[in-house]
Figure (spheres, rainbow over the protein chains, first blue to last red):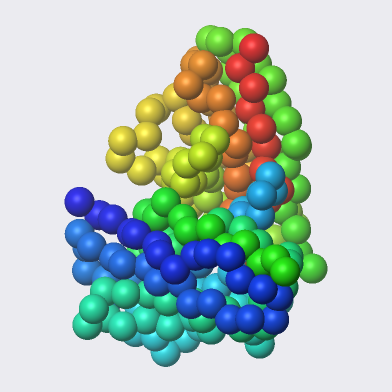
Length: 120
Length: 108
């Protein structure tokens, strides 16, 4: 079945780096745009970044631009987000999500999320 | 910055109809999506392209649009529908994805 599994979350000090992974299965990963979305404790959803099906186009939320980098490897069906210069306000559950075909925004499959805690 | 505005909460009794609105200046030009999120779970796509329902989503969930407001309607609300609901669209540049602040649906 279609599945996304995130990993790599944990506790990290402010200013440090962390890389999250998302393993995709059950669909043709190389044909889908992919997103990262986060949710701070008790807060709403916040879009983080999107990467096109071939990795050629990437967009970022202003809150992470210049600090986070989204990337993918279609040969291994894996999506990543590399997070640098982490801040306390980056603490959240991070979800990867599949972009809906033909849509710039919609997401039709979500992983269960991985938790990132930025704390000294 | 561009925003999508939702009411923080909506309450209805079982069997009644719940309507959750989402307002944004660019909505007439861009598709909107709706997601349901239950506590401790990942979001689930409910409605795409304003009015379309993915397979497996009950017919009691529907979407409509009028000008700068998009509405998610839940007919015959059930206790299991209690959740947070988020609308989503993009900005006019096509480079940013925007979520509304979310609406907590309480089934009385």
